[in-house]
Image (cartoon, rainbow, N blue to C red; front, side, top):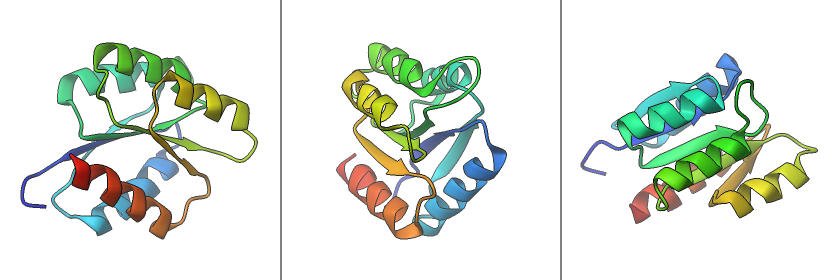
Length: 125
């Protein structure tokens, strides 16, 4: 990729944000990573930076991932959102997809899984 693309990572776990960011940077060091700690902050950051790709956790304080997806998609119907969910959140995952998320990664994720998603989504952009 020749031009810098921004990826928003939102998770209430600093470790989860770091791990995901590290994997994404392995794919392309030109990618700018922006972080948010809850759904409310994710919506604000999305509006500020208009990321090419957004990773959202489902279970977070202040605003959950499903509500954040709805808010982001309401603001930008072309938003490219990937849900990052733990085992046992299938019902919530379905709700997030119905709200407008385009893909998902299950925690704990593998580097190859994240790499495949980032390549697929950012090469389309």
